[in-house]
Image (cartoon, rainbow, N blue to C red):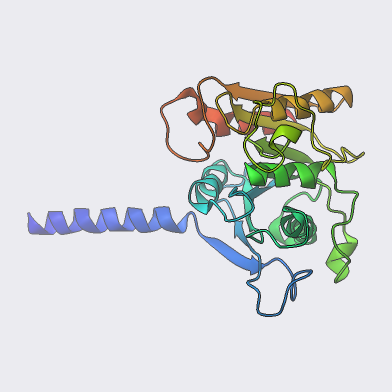
Length: 281
């Protein structure tokens, strides 16, 4: 009896160890040296490379947690997201961009520099990671959703001076998933929308240049960062004849991310996977 119990316990431990190992990642610096505008002793931005056990696509998804550009909500908008998408066979990179906001520059500038550099780094490692350099996507939450829009709509605008050969590569993305993006409308340019976004125009941060990709927008209709921001982005994409998909969930507030939920919004990541497949990613 004791032998059987020991065997069962070992089996459980082995299964747990296997589950953990299946979600292993490697972490690297985003920049070869000091990031633009930083001092040598500054904490360096990093990224996690998550490789799926059974790859189902040659696309790569760069994930940007939220946090108001003051912190990173890694716990429910970082590793949980990476684990889900790698379980679906998708290569994932989690970008730990620079926070908090730097004084004297726009709130998103340091993060945007990190994001543009990140896309170039992913492109430079495409052969090594066995991904398609023209199937790079970006998915971000809240402030990371704003960063997703900056990266995907404004790739033809340089945010920093080149530092090495990697910066000779383009930084456009091929698809984007802004999840409850913040700071999209003028009445909420640096916080919750004062007028619910119903009668506000879009901020001037986004260029919507000729490399702006297809997008899948995810939002809750009770969000203090108004879903009308996502509506405005979708409207702009439609006018540009860029494919767009939008899911606005009833009675859902801000910040659901990768937290477990029995609500209908809990299926949002499956909707993203289905959209990616529909568009060939």
